[in-house]
Length: 206
Image 1 (tube, rainbow, N blue to C red):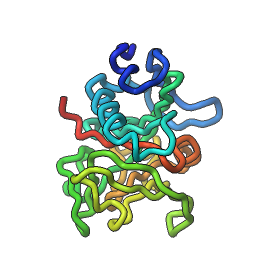
Image 2 (image 1 turned 45 degrees about the vertical axis):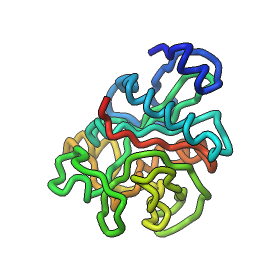
Image 3 (image 1 turned 90 degrees about the vertical axis):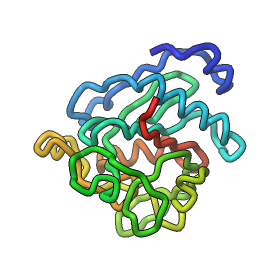
């Protein structure tokens, strides 16, 4: 998919094509070929990037989660804005977003105790080691996710996120609202995003 000149002028990065790639050799992160990041999702992410740019320390990479996809599909994209490339990873949604455990997000919430995922723009925060191991804090930048920090919505690895589980059951397990990735993906996601970058979670509407 080729980004338009207008898109890159708005972002202030070099023009290029967004090529979605799978894992590096020796890193079996994906169970199926990765479809391209839909243009309308990328457009939403770039709008959020422009809107919140002053809140970001780093503007070289962003994370984009496409919650219009099922949990069995890679839907967390770590996008390198300079090269125009991205790598996709599996990511779980909150059980409050999918009470019947269908594998699809049905609702979003910003409320404590909802155990639901929140959509919108986040800025990545500091890393820490908690009961889930290596994790990264998130701060919500929009009205629909402004309670993310108090809700302890973070990025962490979880046993219920893996290509094997997605293949066997047709869906991943569910978090309590956190962006839970596989243990194989965690280092790449945290190392590439790091603190001070945008993570945008899209509902999926055009």
